[in-house]
Length: 195
Image (cartoon, rainbow, N blue to C red; front, side, top):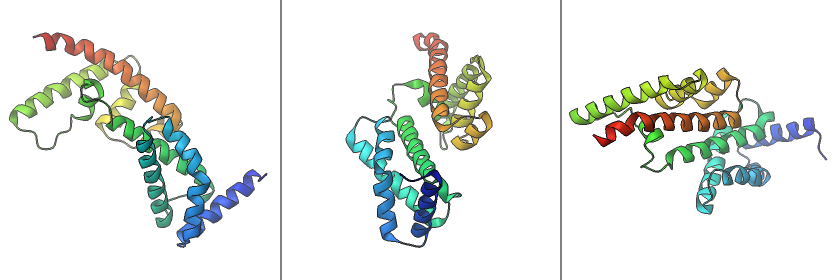
């Protein structure tokens, strides 16, 4: 059984070989981490074709980043790949939400680049409602994370760092904050929908 430092050395060597253009090292990377990546992705999507698509995308992006030298610490290769898979799964989850689910969909659609006059007014009213609902959230962390992640499009890693959260903790906090937001948003808009 390999020691932690031995495992780190193997990851470092693998990353260096990939950076130098070694195709066998790229195949080794996929073989070594494929099972773990699929386990992460299965938690986000039940559809096997989606899991397979995200699996391929995870390794495509990972290889591109490693080749470019974007991997800061080669010894952190496992964490890098796991984080990449989680981020892709989170992005998939956000994009695949049903259109009739107006809570987060409205939150994400506020910034419309080419809205007509009427669309601009409606978007402005929605934006005002969204901001008002955000202010009504009980916890500062919920308000801050939802605002930064959806309205300001800040990087997940930066928000995690600022709040001292792991990627998994962030996903849980974000999910709970969205649920609290959804409840408040539905209350705020239920009266307007009847008129």
